[in-house]
Length: 321
Image 1 (cartoon, rainbow, N blue to C red):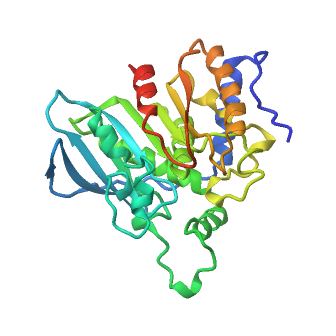
Image 2: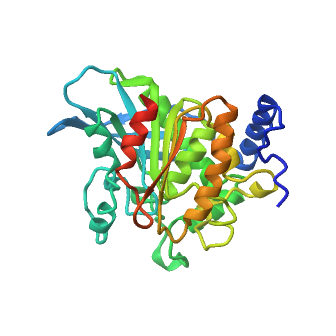
């Protein structure tokens, strides 16, 4: 693959970044039509240490995005906000530490209750239901289903529309930021994003395309394309058509730097191999050094497989201040 926009220390940094931004924006496809989000809020529910409110907003005509907002009790607001994204799971309730379906206990055992972790560390937390997952599952009659994963058909339809599922999911995150930015409880200059697997993938691309995200912690998702989605079977919602003609995943850090970036990986992750993660990190570190922020990116490796590792919070908090 030519990767004509691969990072090189010999490139003019500003010009390269502009070209990279333009190319990624083109490849993720057309973005949806912006509409009034018309946020609908549920009544507050008190829990030990935090309050919870359900939020549903519109991100495009006919498309609603369910979310749950947690706000810490006590302390002085506004609070930094952590946007929490689950990957291929039964839904955003995993971020809230709630088992609702068979298999959820196993998901929770992998430190995937991000929203609770965030609020315990003084963040407000917004769990967002991603397209094709949880409450946003395919609602077609069962006879119409031919795939094991709920993202497949919707991702193909996105391509029919000149879009990508990555672009659509990033759009939802941007519209969520529009909604919560007006809240007294949220520090709009301190919005971060995190997620595992498919949630980590959207976290990374959202940081590339949404400058209001101030820090990111993608888990089990940042890797060279060759080592992961280019050589191992993955769901189609991981793919940006034409990407390797221009860049690899590590090169895209040029659109995130110098904002804090903590990449989390499992030493034994079978679908995002550590060797590919480390190769991507070599590029990311060179990019951050070129931006004068060599300490702005870190890799945290957990002793296990494809899951989040809560130990990464210490690193995240140390580099975000």
